[in-house]
Image (cartoon, rainbow, N blue to C red):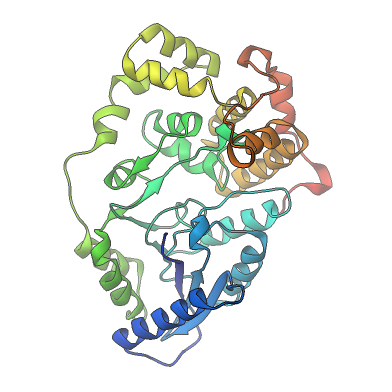
Length: 359
């Protein structure tokens, strides 16, 4: 079971100051009492700790995946602050769906607009990757597995993935490959790596800061930073094999992989053969377009894509095969890359007119 995800932010309002040790004890008692209660647990716990507001995501059994109700509770808390976040700790996993897509996307935009943002226990993406500071531990797991369920890398994936080195972002987006621990930082998805046993001390030091600047936060984070010269990402993904993902089409990538014949190439070709052909082509176009767009422009694009996926059939089939029936045998439609026309892909990116997302 994962611990409750946490968002800690500094507001303009002055709150009573509580000692670090007592704060930790009181918060732990409150969380434990909530988790052990016989009635339905609240999914979001809201607290005031010193000068900081604390939002605790309380759905550990589902890795703190945000649902529509949680988003509606969190978003107003961010809006009431009269100056930007100073600290933010998060371990949520987010996916956009038809009902909550617009609210989720606006939440991503709010996170991005805050100047100084610290995220700890980087388990998910939406409340993590758009922050100025992002802290990973050896327990961190990063993946964008959406093409396996007929979707696309959402929560701003079209913005941050094409900005990774080489074709690493495209590789992660198409294959859903999992990055762990230090590799998350080496790939550029986290800005710092801190051992999990030091996270509580780091959290307390950050919360105790009175009026921290970006430089102050960076100085504290750097003091906890663990340096390592070894990296699986640098050794494998940024070496020759990743060049196999340099092509003008998804079909070209598949041809590169099959022609190469290495174990790496065979494994990736096998993985891609299981993904939704429509999703892979949407994702390819999404990342190509997103490389030159602002985050808000990308979020508008992704809202359009979310609605297109809701109108299609692959998303429902992917969820059925992987999450409901769990037979892991989705029947994609179209079933091959060649059957997915450029026109059908382009339609997914079309304006929704009056129904388009606005900020």
